[in-house]
Amino acid sequence: MTPAADAVRSLPPVVLYLHGFRSGPASAKAQMMAQALRERDLALHWICPQLPASPRETAALIESLAAPHAGRLVLVGSSLGGYYATWLAERVGCPAILLNPAVHPARELAKHVGEQAMFHSDAPFVFRPEYVDELRALAVPQITRPERYFLVAATGDEVLDWREMVAHYPHARHRVIPGSDHSISDFARWLPEVLAFAGIDAPTS
Image (cartoon, rainbow, N blue to C red; front, side, top):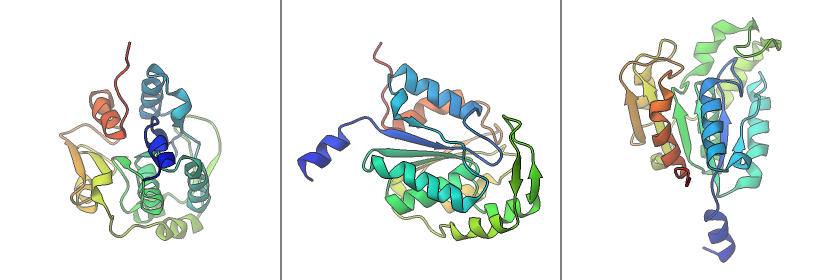
């Protein structure tokens, strides 16, 4: 490893948070993580964009956001964001933390084609038929280097099957939460473990 690479790896990680379907940066988990980074004087190390409805446009956006942070990037993906995080982790070779990730979103979201309501805003959101094929194009049939993945899966997820999540990330680090729900309403309990996997220390003060 070169001295320049050593210097990059000694810097704090940059967290790129990818929200779920119809969600956004105002989601509870995103806000909780953003606050945790602010408490550690790492606000500038937090990236949480509003993702486009189009998976193809989302892939282009997140790849461009990741590019300047090679060697320092950690992905956190919730639900559909977990699917995107898996695609990007395989593409750029960075760690990824997956929170109740969608494993087969093309199958799940085909029934949601049309105009949708956003969870945290009044912004229009239309999920077009062609987006289903765009999702399929981003599929990762089998992960490589499972040690770079941390799966947080709730058995009480009312939207997605936690068993499919566990099966899709074999040999990765798993935190299977008994009960809870799709939103992981008790995320505060698991946040320290998520931050530790991301390489983010506790506040010094």
